[in-house]
Image 1 (cartoon, one colour):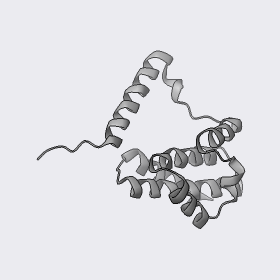
Image 2 (cartoon, one colour; image 1 turned 90 degrees about the vertical axis):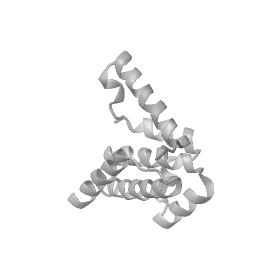
Image 3 (cartoon, helix red, strand yellow; image 1 turned 60 degrees about the vertical axis):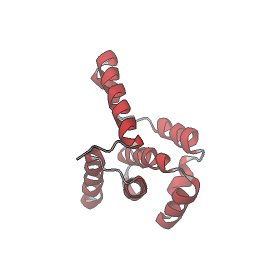
Image 4 (cartoon, helix red, strand yellow; image 1 turned 90 degrees about the horizontal axis):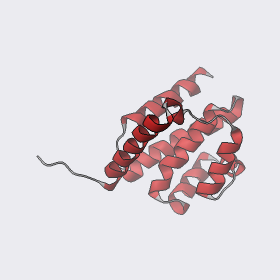
Length: 134
């Protein structure tokens, strides 16, 4: 039985090596999740060319359509993580909105790229926990 190497797997390996090197050089705090809301505003604008309010205002159906029509498959995972960590730093209904959208896009990313990641399943579990607790 042979091992199939996909581009996504190689990219993840490179990212893991980069994480290790940053931890080694900068210390473990290099991967603390951002909590400053302006970081998320900048991320939405810089990487997806839309502002945060755009994503907050979309319905789940509109977000699915937007993601499939206007984003590339490799942009789905970063968008899902941006929505997730933004949601973890938000409160109330805004948090629920962002977490539901993060879950939607994370599932879409896994389906579109046919990729499997234990970390993604941990994220989904964390989202479900947060959504069910409120």
